[in-house]
Image (cartoon, rainbow, N blue to C red; front, side, top):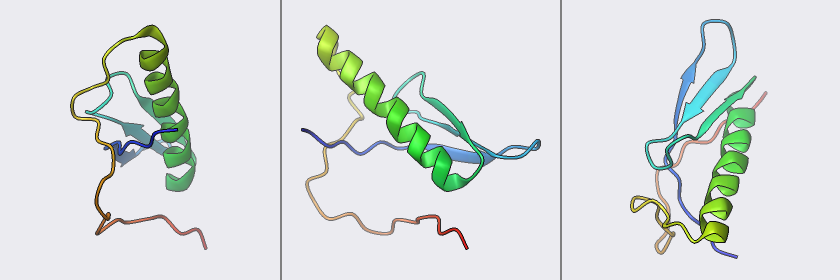
Length: 80
């Protein structure tokens, strides 16, 4: 099993909830009620796109990175 770092952008929607997109993986769109839920959905969508590329022999996006060093300055959502 491999692990990749995927850059996503999350924006708050006027009608409520959040929308995640990615410049790394074209076609990745995820919508959720909370930031945490949106991240979880984006991970699932990203996983499916990467698995599809691998199973079809398609190249992975060049900007998709495998973590080699420690990750710093990460912000995580905490529901209270």
